[in-house]
Length: 249
Image 1: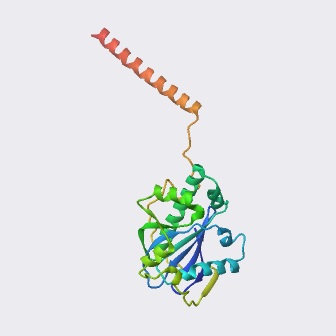
Image 2: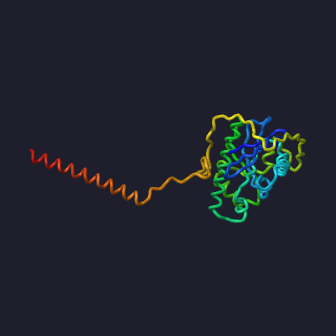
Image 3: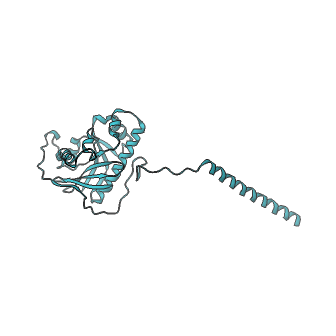
């Protein structure tokens, strides 16, 4: 995936990871925190973060307004963007085909987020957190139960408390932030050996993975016929040699 630095907060960088299949923003710690968990929030207004529909300035402001309140806490949060209105569809339709498609996209994002974080020397704990959002409750209930040994429901308050601050999130003051904006700039990331993380569903590397080629029925028939002829010839040869041995004897 292409990695683009959007801007820097006091303790986190906001990166945009994208390819032809999907994209997401990730709040990545660069100060104080060298170990983290991946969390994700499905948002109804995800179109506001779509760079194909909005200017970089508008998107950056949206991201800053959302992420700045959790900058002081050890929270690595993904905001996904989809190109086919998949988030809108799972809000209104109970369709297992759509659910499984969404499952594969999320697995693809988690694996790429894992590789991205570890390449920046950040240790990633095994549990992944889904932030509660009632708009997607039916899907997220299904998704969390599907991976109940790896994925948990959390609220932002839970994540703040987990980071060591037990004050109510509603009472948390917005931190004073000096932004270092690097719009459309490529991040300088020291690449390490890519670690193949545990995958979700059957989505190992590519969301457009091709199915194995199937042998046409005609070819299978011809192949089986060819094998039959070889077998018949072998049997005939064995019988002929046995009869010849009897006559000579």
